[in-house]
Image (cartoon, rainbow, N blue to C red):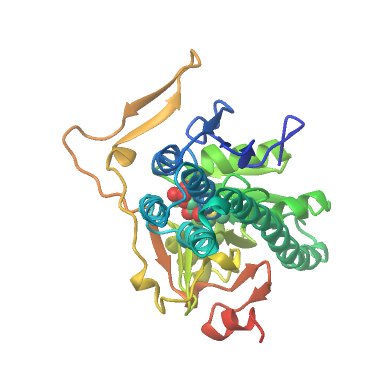
Length: 363
Ligand code: MRU
């Protein structure tokens, strides 16, 4: 993705003993990068959400594990660091998927070969994520184009209005994104579109990250308070919803950022198509219901306080709640498959059903 003419990925190797990430806690006010030199630094970056988004934390976890293997290639260390990284965030399956893939690729290899192999495998995970995002973009573009063609025949505004929640763009993947990849391609293709960006309390990934991305790419967009989406759907101002996901279970249930479920309910009530975009690494075939997905409970401080920029340019955190009040802060919710119009994956599109998901993997 290009920012001010420079191409960035959200994670990149630095030689073979470090890797870089964009510090997402500093956006949108500052574009800062971090160099991570060991697995502990990778775990810290994931825990504190300097890096975030389901596919991206998979790639960051893989690079973190590769650095640990360079220091100590023993089976014990591989398992210990694998488990330590896997515990940083519980809901996104991609982290576990990537760490397992790393461990499986290394365990049967001679110790002296492991460091080089681990680095190669981490790079492959990152490169494959980019290719999957591009394919998701191409598959989602077809859906947006159909909507645009339908609107082109109408007298009123021909702009395709798409609502998205949280950040499922290039900052949540290695590049391009999942939910945002089709939007970028449609924009580049000249399809007139506008994106409603849910601010996504409590951490504001929509207002700070999605809006930053869309603005950098020149995509017309408007930030909405989280509660406003249903209102715009009732007014006929939303043609489709596209969101990303942290885990899809084998029956088609979808875990995504808290608040996604309410948007899916409102979309159903208003006949607005509700699509979920994902790489197939986000499918958890071991669970047959979203009820079994572990939901990350985050710090109450994220609800009780907010970070922002002051007129003097400094960034600070302010208290926004009644002193002494507590807060609950589940990071994700589960949207039942029956509310999902379809999945957009790198393998094609499908219904949000067990058969639909299985059809992506023909024998
Ligand atoms: O808590 P976050 O910011 O990591 O949550 C991110 C999301 O919920 C995204 O929508 C999801 O990871 C899909 S990213 C392509």
